Amino acid sequence: MALKKALTNPAQAVLCISTGQRAASEFLQKVARWADAAKIASSGALDFQAGADCVKLGNGGRVLSLPSGNPSALRGYTAPLVVIDEAAYLENADEVFQAIAPTLTRNRDAELVVASTPAGCAGLFWDLWCQAEADPGWYRQTTTIEDAVAEGLDVDVDELKALCPDPAVFDVEYMCRFSKEVGSFVDPGAVVYEDPARPGGRYVLGADFGRKNDATAFAVLRDFGDRAFLEDVVTMTGADWES
Image 1 (cartoon, rainbow, N blue to C red):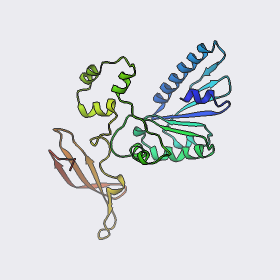
Image 2 (cartoon, rainbow, N blue to C red):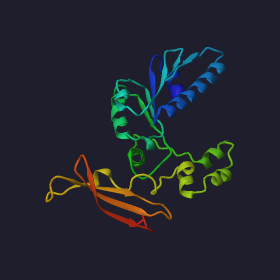
Image 3 (tube, rainbow, N blue to C red):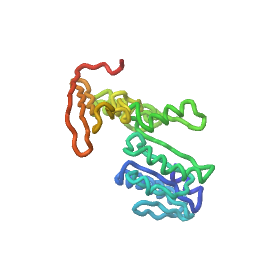
Image 4 (cartoon, helix red, strand yellow):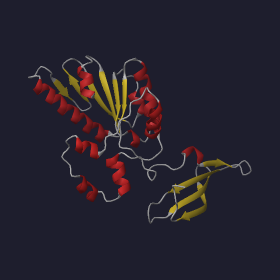
């Protein structure tokens, strides 16, 4: 999709954003392989050059692949297409989204693709997925491993299940199901409390949610900025998170 957009939009840059530098480099290598296939199919008419962070086509179109670590570095572009890869795993997804918004508004026909393996029922990707269900401005698509096999992918699903014996993990990684066991159970903005009756500190809740036979632990700290004191620890086993 990124290469096709660059081929049909001369002298413009398609922007692809990944979770880190390694993922950005891998994305660009895939674009370069597609560009090489296009060059062969066109008997050399569609030439390209591949650099460290860019595939540049003979028509001046470019595909830029950048990590999301510094959202301010994503500003200033004008692009007919922005792709956010593995969006559910961006540590600073909201900042990235804010940084690319001007990129999209400069071009009325610009497209935004937010793609990811689903994670927990929280965060930007989950919010967008839910919003897209009722918003005609979005298009939603789910492609499971079963869908891919039905369309010709040569993979043994039973072998994959053997390599990934945890059904919850398999559902996330291969069946595109958002898991209630992954991600944040609590809004981070709700875990800090300032007690007006006891000025000079905040109460901070830390939570480690266990799975299966692991215990779940809550730690309450009183934070004074440069130091914190542990006030209480609560542990739970066998909690029913569905209720």
